Length: 594
Image (cartoon, rainbow, N blue to C red; front, side, top):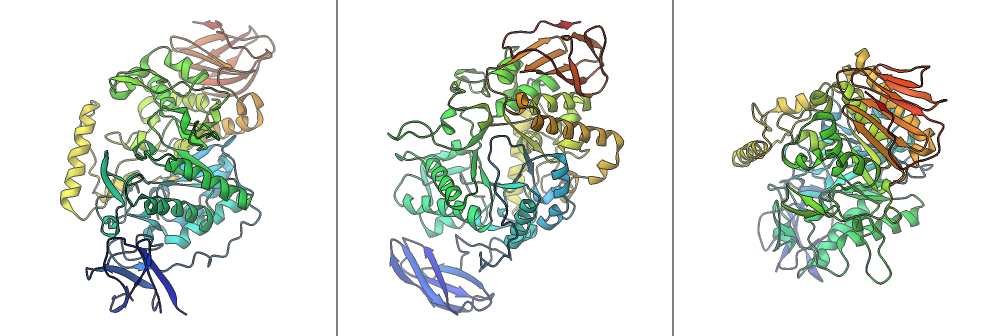
C-alpha cells in the first residue's frame, strides 16, 4: 500500500523523500502549489526524510515520531491505530478544577508514561482533576524540561513515544482525570531546529528572549500559522487531550487582525463542540492583561478568548508572605496591600500600577463580571518558580512545613483555579533543578554561565548544580518513599482534606473576587470567604483569634484549638479552617487578639 508524503518547502526547486532507515531509496516529489510537494511511495520500514535541492536528508517538520533522535530520519505513525477505552469520558471544564503539574521524566524513577500511569491512583486519591504534563515534543538528548523541543508534532521517544502518550491519556480518562499538555509555540530549541531550511517559519521583524520570532504575520505566515493550528488539532483529536497550556504567549508576536491565539481558541472551542468534550486552552502570559481570557466581540474588539491564564502575581504574593524573600521581582509584593488585594480582589497586583522590577507601570485592571477568578491559575509552586532558583528549593525547604501548610490553605480556598506541582502535596524531600542533555559543549557552557549570571541578579550564590550532570536529574526525581514518612503522610492528608472541602463547600468552591476579606496583624492572619474562614499563625509564638459563637472547626494543621471562650488558639506556624455562622461580608474583621 502506498503512503502519501507531503512537505511545505516554498523556496525549494527540488524535493526528494529518502525512504528506509538508511535512506537509500530516493523518490522525487512533485510540486502541488502553494509551496507544497508530495509523492505516493512504498513506505518500506516506515523511516523517511526529505532533502531540499540535493542537500542532506532532513527530518519532517511534521514528524509524529523521531525514534532515533531529532537529527535522524522520521518514522510514520498511524494516529488511528490505538485502541482507546475512554468512550465514557465526558471531559472536564476549567471552572471548578484543580490542576496538577508534572514532568514525565522526573515523576518516577523510570521517567516514562507507563511508569507515570502506575501513580495515577495517587492523584485520584489526592482529589485533583487535571494533570498538566510538561512539554513532550521531541528534544535533543534524554533529559530536559522540554522547553527546547524541536519536533513539535513528535512525542519524546525516551518517555514512550506517541503510543506511550496515548496510553497515559487513556489511563487517566478511565480514572476520571483530564490531561493537558504544555506546548511551546514561541520558539524552538537551539539544536535540531530544521524548520528554517524548509520555509519562512521565523522572522527578524520581531525578537524574543530566544532570538528571532516565529513568523505569524509576515510573508509566508499563512502556512506557519497552519502549522501551529494543525498541531493543536493533532493533540486534541489524535491524543484525546483535554487541553493545552500555551507557553509564554507574550512572545508570540502577531500584528495580524486576528491574533493566532484567537484562532487557537476558536479551534479548540470548535473541537469541543464537535466531540462533546470541552477543550481548554490556558496561557502563560507576562502581560497581566485580562483581555487574554476575555471573549472576542462580534466587531473584532474584546479579548482573545482563551479559557484561562497563569497569574504569577498570586504565587509571588504568597511566596513573599511565607518566605520573607523580597529580592528581584519579589520586591513589590512586600507591599502590605499586596496580600489583601490579591487574595480578595484581583489576581494581578500589578494591574496598572508601577512595577519596580520592570521600571514602569504594568498590567491592566480586571472586571470580575467579565473575567471571573476561576479563569486565573494560581499556585504556590511551579516548575519555573522552583527550578529557576539556584538549587531548586521547594517552598517547604525555604519556609518550613507549617508555613507551606498555611500556603496550601490560602491557595485552595482562593477564588482562583489552583495548581499544584508534583510532590508538593506530600512535601517532597527532593528539590527540582534545571537539567539538560546537550551534546554541544559550547551550548552547555553557555547555559551554565547564563544561569550563574541570572542567579547573581537575584542575590543567589553558592554551588549551582550542573545542568548537564546526570546526577542533577536523579536529584530532581520524586522519591515516592517519602510517603512512608508519617509527617509527610500527615502533610498529604492536609492537602486531601483541603481539596475535599473545596469540593464540598460552595462558599469556597464558588468563591468570587471582591467578596472576601483579609486581615493581618503581625504573624496572625484571617481570611474570610462567605461563612468559611482561614485562621493562620505564621510566627514562632502562639496567638489567639476571637471567633463568633457557634463556630465550627473544620480542619487544622498544627496546634489549633477552638476554646469555649470564643477564641481559637493557634500554635506556632499553624492553620485552621473554620465555619462561622455569619452572612457574607466584605469589610475588615478586627478580631485578632495578640
